[in-house]
Structure formats: C-alpha cells, structure tokens
Length: 297
Length: 202
Image: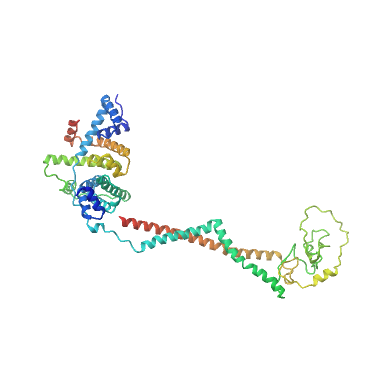
C-alpha cells in the first residue's frame, strides 16, 4: 500500500532538492528515499518540475528602463499642504477641548466653579451695599413675602399675635382653626407644622373662643413701618391679598423653566461644534496623508 | 567599477551609476513583473515604477544582495498592481484576428533567432504551459517559485525580497512546486522533450 506524503514530507523533499537542509534532516530524507519508493517518485516529480521551470523562455525587455533626471525629480509640495496639516491638528485639539468641556464632569465643573467664583466676588459687594444703604436711610425694594397655608382673609392678619397659621380653609377644621398662634411670640411667626404628627385629643366645641388682647409692646411693633430686604413670613403686601397662590406658583415655575432653557442650549451647540470640528480635522488629515503619499510615489 | 561602488555612487545621487545598475537587473525585474502580472504593458509599467521607487529609496538599502533588494521593489509594485486589479477588475481586449492573436502570443522580441522552427514551436508551447500553470498559483506562491526556480535566486534572497521568514519561503515553494507538477503533467503531450529531459536526468 502506497503511503500518502504529508505537507511536511513535501517541504523536506523540496528543500532537499535545493540542498537547503541541515545534515540531520538530510540524513533522514536520504533514509526515507532509500526505503520508500514513493518518496523517490515524489522527488523525481519535483526535480522534473524544477527543470522545466528553469527552462522558461526569458522575455527580452521592450526597452531600457534607465531613468532620466525628469523621472526622479522630486515633486514640489503644494504651499498649502503644511497649513492643511496644522489646521487638522488645531481642529482636532479644539474638538477634544470642546468634548472634554461637555463630557468630563470634573473638567466642566472646574471651569464653571471658576466662573462662579468670579461672579461671587462681585456679590458680596452687593450684599455689603444693602446694609450700608439701609444705614444711609435708603429704602430698599419691597421685601419678599412667604405664606404658610392659604392666603389670609382680609382683616385676618394676626397683628403680631401668632395668627398667621390660622387663616386657612376651616371647613373641616376643629375649633382651633383660625385661632392658631395664640400665645405665639410677637411679629406673627407661626412655626407650627401644617399637619399634626400625633393624634390630638378632641377639644369640645363648647369651649369659648380665646380672646387675647394685644399688649402695648406688641402693638408698638405692629405699627412700625416694614423696612429691610429680608423676607417677612406670613404677611402679604396689600396689593397681593386675595390672589390665588396656585397662579403665582405656575408663573414662578414657568419663569424658572424659561431661565433654565438658555442654559442647556450653549452646551448642545458646543457639542455639535466639537463634532463638526472633529469631522473637519479627520477630513483634512486624511487628505494631507493621501497627497503626501501620492507625492512620494 | 564594481556593484558596491555603483550603489555607493547612486546613493550619493549619481544617476548614471544607478542606470548602470538598472541595465544589469532590468531583464530579471521585467521577467518577474511579467510572471506576476501576465501582461506586457503592466509589467513594463511596474518595472519602470519599481526602478524609480528604488532610486528614491536607495538610502533604505542596508547592504546584502542588491538584486534581492531590487526584486523586493518589483514584487511590492506588482502586489500594488494586483490589489488595484482586485479593486477595479477589467476585461482584457480580445484580439481582432487570428494574426493579431499570434502577434500577442509571440512578439518579435521574444523569438529566438538561433532556434530551429521545431524548437521555436516547442518553446512557444512551453511558454504557454508555464504561463498557464503559474497564473493558477496564489500570488504569494507565484512570487516565490518564479524567483527561485525561474530566476535562480536562493532562499535567503527570496526571504529578503518578500520580507517573509525562511520557513515560510520553504513551505510556499514546496506547495507551489507540487501544484505546478500536477498542472504541467497535463501538458506532457505538448512538450514531450522537456519531460524526457527530466526523466533522463533522474
């Protein structure tokens, strides 16, 4: 039975034919050639092929391939090629900067903090200016008014007696409704929560309404004109009385939304600009490389 | 002036010295290009391009066999052309008549004036058979077998020319020879004297 030669066997025989084997491999191949007739047959086939290929007719050259000075003259690079390469690098750098500014929180945060710090340095001077103006007798703008519960009914101002929390809807309320704040500190700051944390013992309806007479000191405080810039809790300016709080809340929310919108748009524009610059940079770079390769031939 | 001096002068920018090297290796370069591309015009262009490239890159020559270095330029140029063909394949123009066909297959500059008419016929058949079989090989095998068996370079030179290790060269050569053996045996009737010659030697 004839043995099939492996690829390695063919490689050994081919190299043996060209005398490219080391002595150990050569001895091994010669042993196989003397023992196995199929190896000898295979070697003869390779040798015949090599001889035929060696007799391949040589084609004469159609002309001499000697070079002239014009053939090897270096092609002059266009003047704008270096500019294109630098533009590509600059565009890439700017694009990276823009992406980093938008995408890396620490990077953009650092820049934002820095800008905020710059703005904050101006704010204390304004804060300092207010007391100075107050000291000079200048009347500031109308102070901010914050309400707890619903809007107070006309004439239901606590007059500094702690009645600020009792002006809400009293349809389902107990007898304390409208009387909250009795015994509260002056200036009408009602710090009681709107909901009781624990169940309260019922108070009989037959209890008489508590009437607290304003003291002299409280009366003098209430009669003072409202000045300063800080918020006054529980007291609403006259012109705003009777208005619905919901309307003002909706208006405030809309104002907040309007203010927040422009803040996101520059970010998106920067992101798009970065992407555009990156595309331009890649385009310029590829073009410059292609031109350079073409020039080098 | 020997080859080393010519190379040195050429590196210094002496175009005349380089052209003397061109005259030495142009036939080998053109034949390698023709066997790789199987087209006279393409082989001509590739040879010219390879010599221009060789002159421009002479400084990258680091000694060793100069003909292997030149063959490397030719091989690389041929691979570029083959890649271009793969990207944009073209249909070769058909000869207009039988005479034209004959002229393409047997150009005047190929004919050996000293050979007898019988030898010329057999040479033509051999040329056809070898061209057919070599073109049937993968491109990497083709370059190796042409450089070693047709042009007589040694393994080390082919390794330099192709940039492949010696083991790869041995393997590619063995497989190329095996395929060519099978292919050429189909032409035994057309080129009997060449097969007889091989048997006599064995």
